[in-house]
Image 1 (spheres, one colour):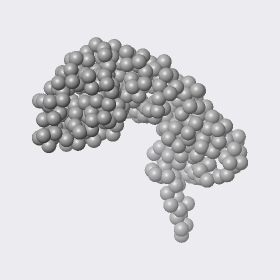
Image 2: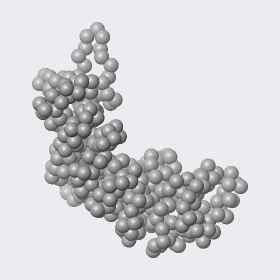
Image 3: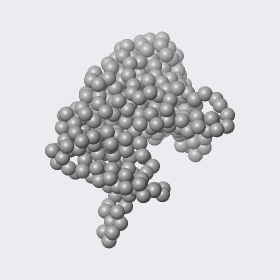
Image 4: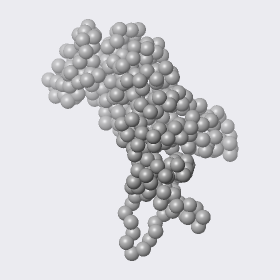
Length: 359
């Protein structure tokens, strides 16, 4: 990418600011935040395709970040500021929350919100108080709203091309919102309660329903649509595991049928595949509408399904077996016999033997 002199100077200045935020002392980081550094870095985060300028010279510096872009460097700099102290963590989270809750529809607002989700994911991963701070600031409402999203209307010509570009930006935002929600809720606690109160189970189910598989299955690889649905199912797992209200909302929204369809369709090896099947295991073990039908479907997947289906069903059975209700459900529909046959045949053994794995 060729940058003008003005853009190059701006990028160089921001890159210097990133270095100071990453490696500066606490007083220096406090001074950067007080002088508007958080605002500048948050704005720079959306420049995810702009490479960091090279200063040249006989001894070029090693890459600052990977990927070595202005947006990634700014994101890591903000995460470093948040890790420096509790007041800085709250300042960074508060500013990014403002970007996350910006008005939807404008491409710039969508890009800023997507960048905010990315940075907040780094904060949650690296700062112990990051998650509780975000939950206390009310992050679940904007996240659930972004996950629900707004599908682009059909159009033609230039408007259609513009809306296609906007749709790509919205998809990036939705995917990052799902991952951030999962990171905030995976440990349980107030994050789960806030997510359920914000309507996240229904929003995630809408994304699990998705648009079916795409061309990515040609070589046995999942399409982007299937991967997105798996991530949404994985984010649903801690909600239905920890909260009865979430289980009721999911069962009422047809989650069992949606998750069974996803289990049949998605090959093992996809990121968070195991977590996604955990949501199916929790709901299949719960006493509710459709449980018997779901268990019979799992048995059919074990007996008549292909390799991927049998592996998925065995993994679900493994997760169900760690709880008394799950074991009772498995025995009531006689799923033990086909699992033993799989073991005897040497097929999918690694999945079927995992009895007692945590749901």
